[in-house]
Amino acid sequence: MPDHNEARYVSPVERWSARIDRMGRRRRIILALLITLELVALTSLIIDRLLIGRVVEGDVNPMTPALIEAGLGLLFYGIGWWAMVGFDWDPQSPWRAGRPAVVYTVLGAASLVLLVLLVLFGLVFGYVL
Image (cartoon, rainbow, N blue to C red):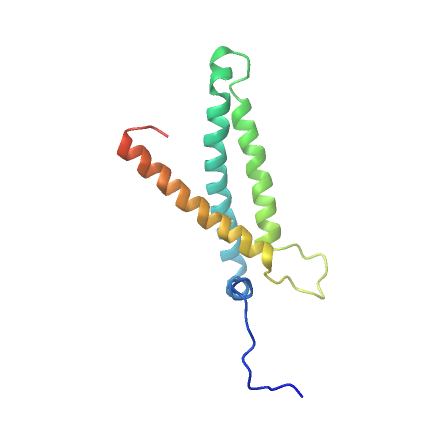
């Protein structure tokens, strides 16, 4: 016979899922957009560093990095929408936040910390990002 007085262990993922679930739809959409912008900013640094030499030499069209970043932005936003907002394929079972929403949120927090560190590093050492 199970003891009903025992507290059920709730994992951190379940706690964060519940917190995201309590957010309104509009807030989740805005959060997905902000995380997407952070991820695009980070990937644009990498793409620009990789392609700048080839663009200057004329081997690559100057619009290529921007098009790659725009495509990645659409991809990141689609993943964010799927994880944070969901698609209403089945009206009988409403969307619930789960592990993908938590992973996307943690990825957004990590990218925000990394962006702040890069800006501080650039300010301290005089680099232009």
